[in-house]
Length: 186
Image (cartoon, rainbow, N blue to C red; front, side, top):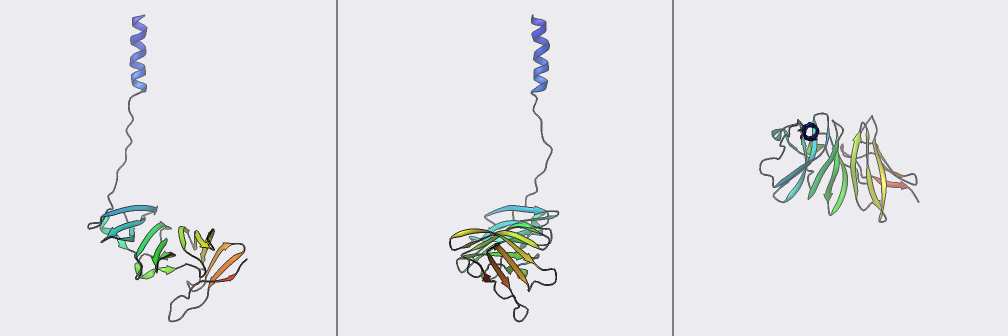
């Protein structure tokens, strides 16, 4: 009986041996930041947030700490990038106490405000090609949203919050986009 027990014990020990995963972590935490977090990634881009002087700022990285690009829009008190398509970054910025869905193309100066007029706040949470998805709050109710840029220009932006509510950006002056306005809904 002792021989059988001895044969089983080494077999069980081999089955319970720890397995170690092979992986590496790249520290993206920027120098001077009190906290940071990468939230979304696609291909060679990572996006998220870093806090400098108590101001949370949207960030874009390309695999290293030194590659960080500050995406924080002028005039905002808080910003965060939640996702990237590899060419566009999406998230939101707080302006005048309200969260505005936003879209970047690699720089803070490229930020496009996608918050429809008549909404309390809006966030963009994902992007693919010319489409961005997220939500907006209308009359205290969250509405899933599809923010869709046309292939021809950023001057023509449509947001479909529900089949019953539609908002559109038309025109603009001096190369700037006009605000989105609710044009139909019930």
